[in-house]
Amino acid sequence: MNETRLETKKFSAVVEEVSSQPTAGKCLITEPLTSCTLIIVGASGDLTARKLIPALFELFLNNSLPNPFNIVGCSRTDLSGDDFRKKMKYACEHIPGQSPGDWQKFAENLYYRKVDYESPRSFSELAIYLRALNSEKNTGGNWIFYLAVPPSLYPKLSRMIGQAGLSREGREGNGWSRIVVEKPFGSDLDSALELDRILHTDFHEHQIFRIDHYLAKETVQNILMFRFANAIFEPIWNRSFIDYIGIIAAEQLGVEHRAGYYEQAGVLRDMFQNHMKQLLALIALEPPASFEADRVRDEKIKVFRAMKPFDVGKFDEELVLGQYGPGKIDGHHVSGYREEPGIAPDSLVPTFAMMRIFVDNWRWKGVPFYLVSGKRLARKVTKLVVQFKEVPHSLFQNVLGKHIIANRLTFGVYPEEEITLTFQTKSPGARVCLRTVTMDFTYKQGFEGPALEAYAKVLLDCILGDHMLFWRQDGVEQSWSFLSPILEECETCGNRGERLHPYASGSWGPKRAEKWMQLIL
Ligand code: BG6
Image (cartoon, rainbow, N blue to C red; front, top):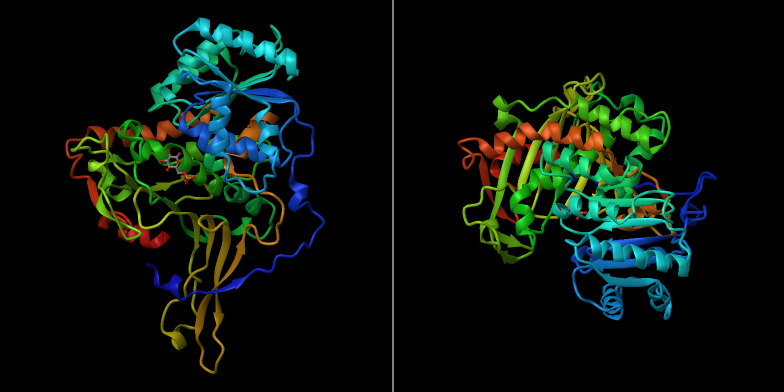
């Protein structure tokens, strides 16, 4: 889309180990991990088979699980332990690097227990079962409850766990106890506050782990390292040198089988309240005093607080909403959103949004942050673009007769995990010609150690009790406070339909967003 990008030639950064700092295998966990039992509530569901058990098996293969360590799958489905293990084995067959016998060994610590989500008695029985297992395997009475269930069940299940005596730390045979929930945390500010109130009935803040899997992506974690472990970028990381920031999370996938959830959420709740805001915060935050979870999260909160409230009067300048219609993805016909199973034929739920945000503080005043996310777009691309300003004066103006393309730094998250920097060089030859070249660093270049998939990383951090990659409640609230007026305006205004711009599946979104899209792609 952007011609200047197409002209760009590539130069690879040569990655050499130029320092004695740890790389590759040396970056694995070295401290002993505390034994515990991970209880997955909702274990017969999709998330457990697709993400959680494969991630745990991956950790096992990398010797990154505590020993002893138990995994107890719980759900309402009637399954035997063998059925559960068989299902999970199938889900892990694709994982590379396993030798015969590895699964068997891993599965020795995999259990299944049917529970009734409506019955406190069922949870009391679960507590007895867990304590018996703990006596047999001695995992220190340490529990992690991972709620792999629809968010509407979080309040009820958290209470059941608490009432069964499993949330109190250091009492009744418990060591520590943690609860893990995944976004969305409520569907607006009020429901987020209510969810938090209920979670806190039985758990303290330090026991609650609110997952945002974007934070666990390696290249996303790397943003802080890049910014604060290099001295040369920070002095130019501000409004004097940066023209705008672009953050895009484009997907080819449609709503899939999640109609019930998505019809309530739409793209703003699904992607903007959480993932997009976290990406913005990492680019925008001030240097924390130290790399500690609360210091980093303090700085994120300051960014959220500084976000300029959405100007409802300028709706069309600040926000473009869209919904995918039928079209072609990779040459195959795909249905429009309204024809997807479970979606209302007159649904006004947005599947695409582009938002312009300003962070009103000393560093960022006046610099637009363009955030885009959408389903059924041309390609899956996730990246952050830092667009620098043009040179203040072009001394080549009289020779070249055109402006000089400004530098751009890109953090690629998907499909390439990379960092690229574009700059101008002289083209070889007698005439004065400039060309844009890129210096690119592929994240895995020169690294041979194992890399952890996002869920493996968050599970490991739950075991370690490290909150760095998790939302803190004040952040959740700030994020909803910003989004609520926007949602209200989008969902209650009379011309809601007119504000929803259709786009063909396989395109780059609504025509109306094209000009902004070109800034980022
Ligand atoms: C999830 C959203 O949180 O993130 C999904 O609920 C979306 O709708 C997904 O598809 C995207 O994640 P990723 O890691 O594939 O970019």
